[in-house]
Amino acid sequence: MVKRRTNVLKVHITASKTQDIPLELLLLADPEEAAINQYLDRSIGYTLTIDGEVIGAVLLLPTRPHTLELVNVAVYEAWHGRGYGKQLVLHAIQSARELGYRVMEVGTGNSSLSQLGLYQKCGFRICGIDTDFFVIHYDEPIEENGIPCVDMIRLRLLL
Image 1: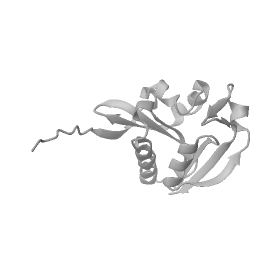
Image 2: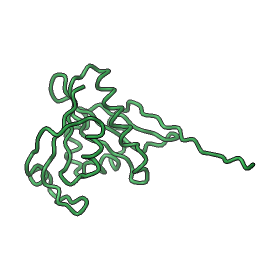
Image 3: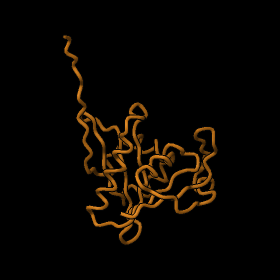
Image 4: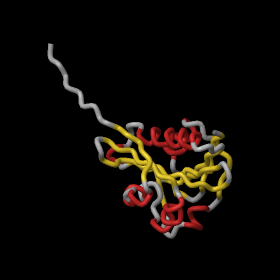
């Protein structure tokens, strides 16, 4: 009998100073540095590391009493499709509950098909549309999945 050796990856999600999260990682989820800079210092950050290497991050922004907005969820492309984005979202939800928040909101582009699926699988429900959000607030046009990203789809989860 041949014994197989399996590599067990050490995955950890920990609270992180937002300034220590790599900008190139955050830019994967929000393509404009100016937009990131508007919320970075006011956010609560968590990073997902594998064997000590940062491969993903999530930022939560307190917006109103008892409400947090999930403003950035990013995983390096080489690690896509392995469930790490979902782990980050679920960790954010649990952390928000532990911190006493009652509502979590998130906005994503109309063309962000996998993100829309992820958030709904994690319990979020569509609650609105910010028409022309990306046309108004971003300098460069965005396209994903062959679809122009123009509207922000708003989702909410009661904690």
